[in-house]
Image (cartoon, rainbow, N blue to C red; front, side, top):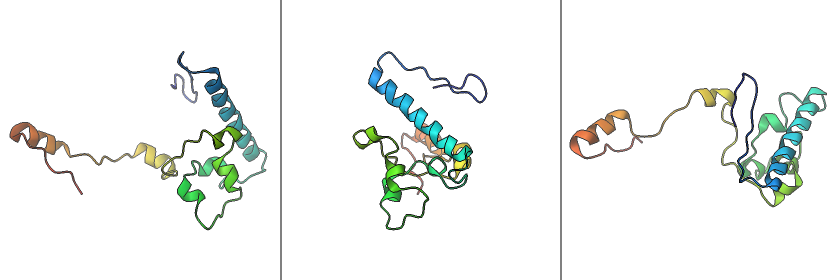
Length: 127
């Protein structure tokens, strides 16, 4: 995927992708468009809907309380084939766009690598 022009998305599958996989990809985009249309048509809330709350990790789906205006089934399996081929995200959305533009690193600070260069020993990881 690439974004060659602002507000666009270009998809270029490799030759190794099967027709079945391409069809699943297209079905996913068609389903997403239907969910967008439901928001546009006022059928679902703009603030609390499948798309706004996606992804739905197992931890969210298995909680005792479910306070969302759609079912757990809709959240977990928006398309039937996902029952057999489901990728379970490990986390839900993290602070919307803020998390995408304000990344943090848990690796050794650069000073630790400088120390390794001079002493041959890597600095301990921060805790």
